[in-house]
Image 1 (cartoon, helix red, strand yellow):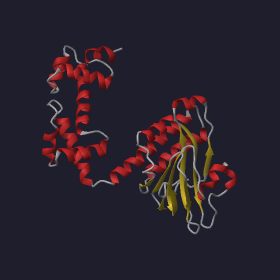
Image 2 (cartoon, rainbow, N blue to C red):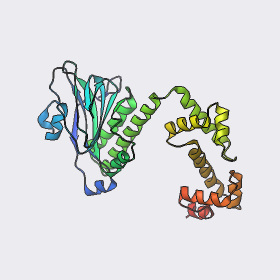
Image 3 (cartoon, one colour):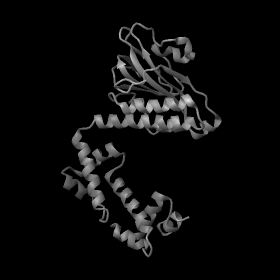
Image 4 (cartoon, one colour):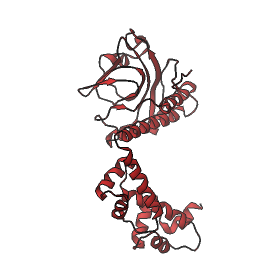
Length: 299
């Protein structure tokens, strides 16, 4: 059942089994749930329903897995890495393995929480690459029906446990991670930054058949090349040059599908003066030499 915000009202709790096949994929969902904690209730409610490690959430614990916790009502506190945060509606907590932490609602107020636990090599790689970091474990993403809806999709998979439900649940968890990082990135940047990125993308698309000239693009937008590079990378995780290359290679793929078009012609048409450089770049990005592209896609 949902309220006007789209909140899932029914309490829901699952600790999940997973197979060796699931683990081979590199990501498994270990737990998922939703819970309304009423005022003047000791947290977590129904302690005996949880494994010992999970009962210690209010006092302090260290988990061998990741968790995402999203608060949509009430208030409380979250502590980790020597810092304490005030938790309000729209707060999202990212629990990392090996990090001692605690969280709990204010006793007189309570809260509503959603959570999902997960582990595996794929998520560990995200942490090793810095996408998930101990420096970024508390997010004020705000109240979003989209986030609640994603939790709902995970819960549906967990309830029914149809074939490959673990993979589908983990796809939802990845969406949660992406949505969280996106919300944080947007909230930390002025709106005109997004307009700069959109204009830069437009100029690249409309000049795809010209040589790459990032300084010229930055001049048309009215920012320095270094500033454009900084803003663009913040929003897209790519530099303007990398993005420009990406759309040129994508355009090259469609050109190479045509009959009676040579690799050299495609390279020159896209502003590459050196066809050999273009060929190396194309193969690096697609895994296929441009001379073999037509045969590859028709197999």
